[in-house]
Image (spheres, one colour):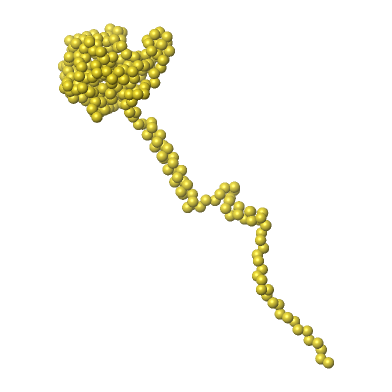
Length: 310
């Protein structure tokens, strides 16, 4: 009897593929963190980082440009409806008001070397000439010496300064009393705009009804056709000081009566000097500047009815 034979069946590969083991959530989270994070910070490729840096730099540049524009832009002329001058409550020249005003800075109006050279060069080109100076300062006495062939007139409101000056045949000093204060600059500007008596067609005289007109000057000042006018007085550094509103207005009136006149205004970094110069001397006539000096060159217009034309 033959022995029994046991047949072995070959191993059969299962038809259903074996799926990979799904990692638990904690392991998956750790894998993602290792891939995209390092040290708690997101990994950025160079391609993703460049646009971010460009945006930051561009934003910083725009902000800086806006800041520079705001700081350096010149203010426009004050509109007729809103006061541009920050007035302190100092309506009169009372002792109480004076005590509330800080002392003036003695160095506020000192000329720099460049400003002094600018002034001397301009006067040198016009000598011998008829020179009118608002403000008697020691530094301006050299102008009278330089203009020895012409004649020079100083307008001053401080008796102490006048007492130190000796008049000559070629140099005169006239005392003036200003009826204005710097705190009322805007009211005076509005008055000049609305009052026909402030028009350049009216001659300066003791009968002038414009509040900016200097009515107590000698006839010589009104009738002379000046070549150069320097405005560096009176004081205008405090609300109770006279301010230079009347001096600049007077220079503007005198300019229309002459031929070709150079007007130099000092301290144009201050609001009143700047706006009154634009109003009565006109920006179109500004030909040069140095430091805090503006030089306006104005052609005579005896029949002018307005100061500035658009």
